[in-house]
Length: 420
Image (cartoon, rainbow, N blue to C red; front, side, top):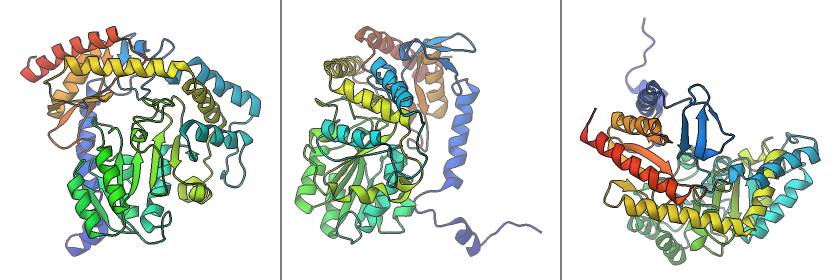
């Protein structure tokens, strides 16, 4: 006798699939990952002692420049950052308290909050990751517990990062959830006209290339009182006098209807995540909410490396690396103008080639020539729009960028022409 459930019961057992569908996505994703793995583009084990510009595969000896790292300024290997982490461990003599931080926490964690608040100009809530912050905050935002206790209609940008989209089913148990076409301000305004309480969930610099329409978002917030939840993980540290990121270039002064979250494990060079708050009124509440209240506080080493990164952010070196990153972006954009590349003006580029096989082939050939760039497929990008994502960094020289673009142009032409 078969155990297969059919008919109306099957739909009940399998769920409505309103905001996720593993039955559809997992097979497609696994097929693409197998293709990448079969071509030797996964599980590459490296010696990083010579830095990201010269990683070495320990099994083959092959050396390459890493263009898939989110450490956009190279601060993850900065001596000040590394030594600060070591010093914190030696001083505290404990890796962490392994308990909810709202009960007991290291004094160093409190000092870190003060330092971050001073750096970014307002209350800052740290956590073990930006994803944990989103998992904790978005359901509470949806139910209205960060505003007036009335639910808000939650509008997610179509390209919002997986760490936010992942929470959609939970959020949908609290309120209505809508998905907006990417950067579609008309769609968003129509929602604001229809519903009195709206929150918009988006990124600043998108992880697959492109930037949010900050001016449009700000205008709608001012006109309708819309709450803005903005993940600026891929832009934190890359711009601004104190490394405050892309979002703060428009949302300079945060208010009670704005929250900017960001990873401190990318350009910032440490590990963990932060939430920049417009008001301290919800600070303690968030500290004990959901995933933020579990026994996973910031580890001692992470507190130390974050102190170290703050020191670099307050030094002239931050500006030097930001300017070099901007030069690399300009060089790439000039050389690749007219190509099917998303991310003009951004340090994150996405080169679209269409088919999964072509994306893997492009990634593999670039690696063979000394550059690692990630092949990306559905469901990370839409079906039929597979390609290669690459990240420029401020610890790459202009000459390195020029050399890379020369190789990319050559390999891309071969792939698109279908040459063997």
